[in-house]
View 1 (cartoon, rainbow, N blue to C red):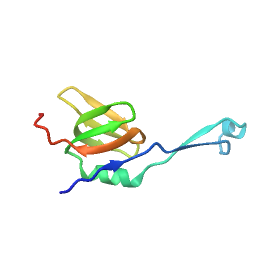
View 2 (cartoon, helix red, strand yellow):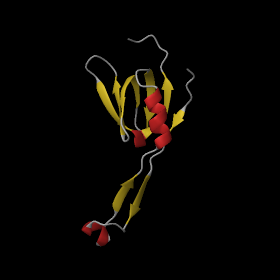
View 3 (tube, rainbow, N blue to C red):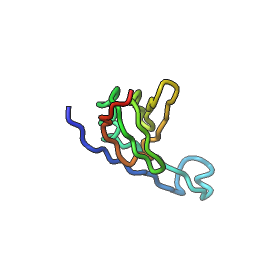
View 4 (cartoon, rainbow, N blue to C red):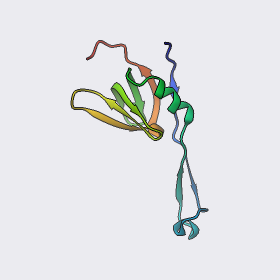
Amino acid sequence: MTFTWVHAYAVGKYTSKGASSMAQQGSPQLVSLVDPYVYQTLQKVVGMRLIVQTVKDTVRGKLKEVMPDHIVIEAGAKSVFYVRIQQIVSVMPDHSERV
């Protein structure tokens, strides 16, 4: 199986239109979109060790689960990270000898 870089960028839009009463009063409302290509690609590598670079930090570990809005990375026996897909900058395989 070959693995290519996966790039995801934060996607969001503020709008003053919407069904809620706050949005109708002119308050900003965040609309979040799912990136189907990143979601599908990540689903194909569940169980693999990955290096996930986010806008804030880098996480290494085994990809345990993929949801439309976040992924679950197990970095150790007691270390689990939940990473929002919108915060992911890049993903690559981790071929290091870590357990």
